[in-house]
Image (cartoon, rainbow, N blue to C red; front, side):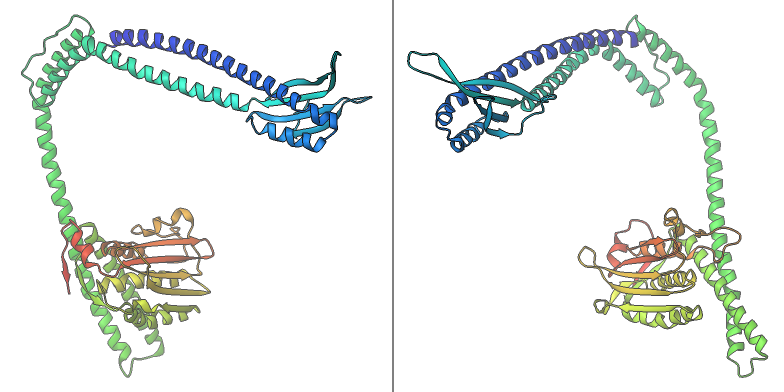
Length: 493
């Protein structure tokens, strides 16, 4: 089949290429000759016309009129690039009128030169030469026309290729495609599992040999089909076992997270009671108790983040959507943020725009969690300067959104790390000597919360200059959550 089709294609395409090349060359040569003849005719006509019109101005030495005449005559031809008129004198010719810019003598470039004598004939006497008219016509337009002709010819050649491709397709159909079609039918039967129908060759060329080869392949497939079916059954059983093990693992993670949170809550309760008693003990014990409370709180946050990651990955995240006032929620969190910032000697600026003084439908707990994670992250990675929080509504667009920007003057993030910081268990600095601790879950959980509510979190940053995290959330997450095809537990308050 390959040799037969190649013979047909090679013969037709070779003839087409040779014919196209010869035709294009001949047509372009003829086109160039015609255009040059037209340019020369225009140049001779224009120079002779100018020479006839310059007689009277040269006789009267009316050079302003001559200048005007030359300029008006040049406007009638799009090819004119330079015209000059000289008057015969006693010693040499004097330039009396010109138009355009004279081409360089050593390199005239794309210009064709024409010259005509300005003569007058006395009655009964010889012609007297008053001067000369010299004209340079640009050949750029001629070259552009030739270029356009070339493109037209190439287009014609392409259409010819298409036409011959159609003819070639018909030839190939009779000699190649029909036999191949029969083989394709047999191949489809084999692909559908019909290994009983034999394949008989319909030609005595390469396609016939291919039919015999396919029949041998059919027999080999028939022999190995039972073996493949047995192996597939074994693989399927192994896959079911692996899926069950994964389900058990996820359930184990959820159970263990719950079991760990229960004693941690107990530790926190005891520590809070000890710290709030009237006789908490020695000053050193108060410091130890406070540190224990901080560590337990950090451990609880870590376990909650791990549990959220597991729920999100298992597509079982549960949200309770209810109306809240964003300004009130942010104002409530302002105090604890200022306290954390002041402990590090940082300034904290909170700017709330009045357009957010309304009720929005979102998940209050997750809304607070993602805000706390982003702001705490900004305070954590800032040693000096300030942390700024600005909240407002975005203009235009559907659905209506609220935007919260958290800016800091901290260490910043390299460009290649801007997306990695949102991956679970990922931090900007992962070395063993890193300055800032943490499991790297806060930003990942926050972005997942934002996206599950119909928004997102983005970041822009420069190293050693700080970062800006932008939180975008819809004013009403109910419609977004209803449009999600996945099965999640969502209730609306």
